[in-house]
Length: 356
Image 1 (cartoon, rainbow, N blue to C red):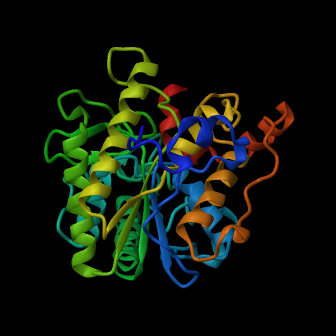
Image 2 (cartoon, rainbow, N blue to C red; image 1 turned 180 degrees about the horizontal axis):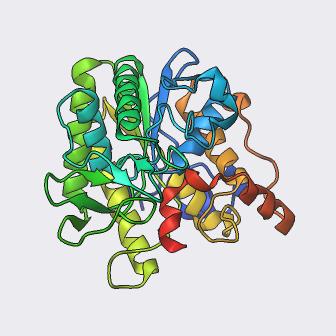
């Protein structure tokens, strides 16, 4: 008998597409709608997983766009100071609301009331980038000067990019009760002081995330009509939850919401938005957990290599030879796991502080 599944391609069937292939050959990005060239200027933002994507794009010869770099005099501390972790020095942008407000601030449309946090001693911290300056700024004036330069660099980034790869990281966030300004970390974790009357917890649903992404994409395209958005979902699990429930349940909820939001956006705006399934490559059962390190959160270099091989094959004009799928399919040895962990800079994933 004939039915819709009889003639469906093999990649639509679990046995052929997931169970049978070797781990490194599983590729869920088939049919990705965009094809990047080496000339396309690609920017990254989002959660800590976006750092892996940006580093790999640069290593593979893409025109990875960075508009905020360190002065040569401080090049030796550029990494700890969050330069070139992303395309500008905004640090981790975990939520769609953060990204929307960053775009608004860069375009002069929003100025949060909370301007500076204090830390140990006389140090001053940026509430919206609390870990980019180790030890803090020496004064509010220095912070304000650095912030002005930073937002100018972000505006230039928005005007010049062809593609923005944005990794959705969290649904949970803390915001200001005064004006709704979204923080990357709960006040009091890295700097500042938590006040339950001034700081509110929110856990965004699909509709709120979709609305925030649509809003910031519209703003970007108002200054750069050619801009396109590639969404990914971070496979890195929550370090902690502010909900009164098990962190595993909160993590499942968060990833499900982010994945549905990304799908909704890609279907609603097919000419401007696409979803790339890096989350599925890293968290899928086909790799039997071998792409996650011993902390059960961090992603191994082999996992990143698999993601970028799929990206090269499905999302660029270079073809599979440009970035071959990694041959090694066996789980990494314990020594390799520790090598991978040692590559992680402590400030790279600020959210990890919540579970310390």
